[in-house]
Image 1 (spheres, rainbow, N blue to C red):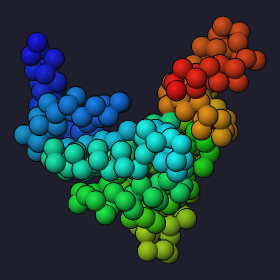
Image 2: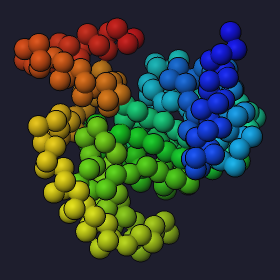
Image 3: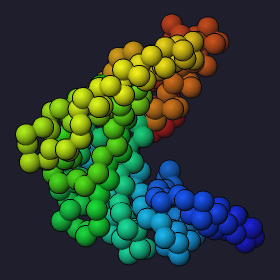
Length: 245
């Protein structure tokens, strides 16, 4: 019965020895006992232990009370007690709307003393607004993607957000010319992978209804196409939402 714990601890130790500096430790259902072994092992190495709250639902909707602001604050306080060096908000489906990101970060900042890291996906097409709202609310770190690899089920656009924050109190200090040069390079590289590039071409508010994480969304859409069911995608998305609820 100890084997899985030993395997997790062994993996963490070897990864840290090989040079891994940050471990983002999460459970997709926010079941904190599942984080204990990994977090304790990371804390015994040189590495940073980032405890995670996985975001779902909508904290702005009083009818969605299962995953409320209170629920996330309780989790965050527990993770801080468990010794997390950083707290991550992991929004894999890109559901954290701008006003929710602001409210969540502000509340977390008032309740915990460790830095906060916001990770979201741009499936809706407006996740950059959530990132900027989180920044305004005092978030410490955000995840973004180089322009030509950004958007859709990836992260929001790094280059554009760097440009948007120039000459403000949250100016990143990053070199925009260099970022644009890198984006051009990866745009050419990405062209070689076009046959495998299955991500949606534009954002969609549909994500707020089906609530699929980005990777699951692209996989399911490809599977539907492979079965000749692309024309029934809205029905598939609705069915997924019903099962999810």
